[in-house]
Amino acid sequence: MEATILIADDDESVRRMIARVLETAGYEAVQAANWFETVSRQTAVEPSLILLDLELLSREHAEILTAMNRRAGRTPVIGLAGWPDQRAEALRRGVDVVMEKPLDLGNLLETVHELLARGQPTETKPDPKPPFSPARRSPVAADAKP
Image 1 (tube, rainbow, N blue to C red):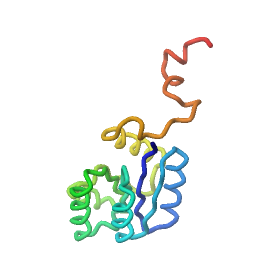
Image 2 (cartoon, rainbow, N blue to C red):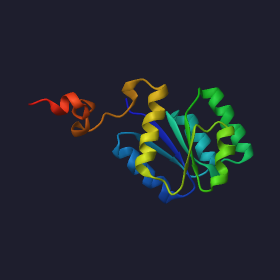
Image 3 (tube, helix red, strand yellow):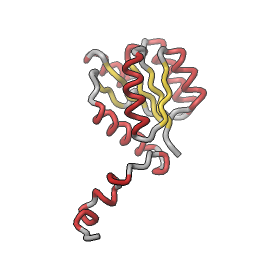
Image 4 (cartoon, rainbow, N blue to C red):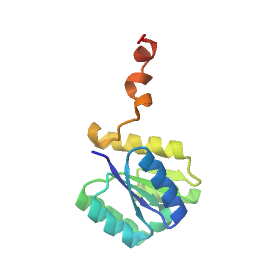
């Protein structure tokens, strides 16, 4: 089963870029352009993880995020910060990881994998493509003769 990731950002180009990267990695990406869409989609699809533009996280919305997580179970959240001063408040409000824009997409993908691995059964992670399977990356398998 693939993990569903909710991308909440008011910048359509950012949402589309992140969605493309996640879908290429085998995840299902659901997009939201504002806070109301975020709440609606979070309720409808129950994502495994939320990528949240911190510009959408006002004080009122932070309280709603906390309540949503209490109601639906703890959903990991990666905060996407446009400004360095957003980090401390976001972490205080329950965001798990804060990443600054512009995003390093490789680092974002690694962080997504790590957060999902913490709280999800292995089968919810996307299967790696065959040339990059864990068996082929291990020193034993790499040294083995076919």
